Image 1 (cartoon, rainbow, N blue to C red):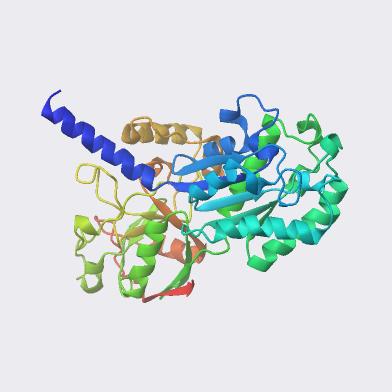
Image 2: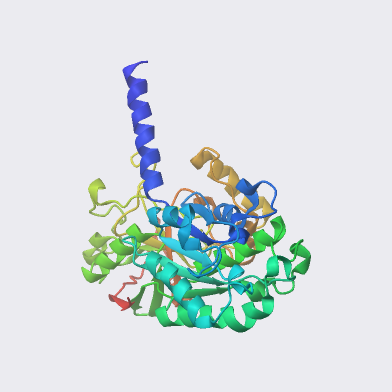
Length: 422
């Protein structure tokens, strides 16, 4: 093999290794519903497998389910005695979804809520204390529509669910209600206990939506002459989150201009050289070195370039083949509502930029049709946050008259940036 081929192979391998190291690790801990009892082609159709498809390649979702398992150590089949439990801990997850309790409702296992709470809390705390400091999501059990395997939905409703809620509240862990979600879906539970492929898909979407709604995201407020813009930073893009907070603390954004404004596309800021820029001066080159850039953290289809998202600006692929992000410059996506023809053209551009590796999902396409955005950027740029208030201010800036370099004729500055929620 020629030396150039060896070098190319090593380079590609290093890129793969980098990409893998940046994946968000998701551990799905549970019983036979997690494992996928009765589901055809478990590699594609269990709820963890479908969750992987919904979250995309920026996540590594693993199924640590085991049939018949209970939260209680005193039960007939405790989860803590399984290899899956040991493997899930060793996985060092960033997000843990725990869905246990169904088998604890069996008469031989259910003695009282105190014993159940002790068991479930022991398992959950063991994950929360990992060095990876995972985000904890505790699921209420799915509805049981039959007494198969002696499982009792009355015990689930009156005993287990209140206990799970108390544990989640005590530790301030996120709760996801699969019991209410599945209550009207008996047709999707052929044996009354386990969901079929469609039912598992609904569970996966419910958990995906829970991952999207993170109450512990840091927030930053930008104070401008037109009003305030409040943004939140995604914990699933930790490199960008931590860098952004460092820049705020360093006052990097204090006094910078919104130096690039393109209607129905983006408003851009973060060029430190804009603080003292003369009228008409072309901006955007910045003062960064490549060593300052942030490794890409692509999280589509969980987060994508819909209206209101924060997008990391970057140099082009010619000088930046790893698609690393600027450490200071970012945009707020304004975008436009897109029809199928525009989305098809956007997909063609995405195919060109990603070599066909990224496809807009049906849900993404529907979002672009209703909310709008900049679909052609998906798969090539990092989305790391979103506006939670102040889009009216963004719209005022977007309407500015600009010069031939897209710089507003009238200067709009970020007077001050402040971390307003840690």
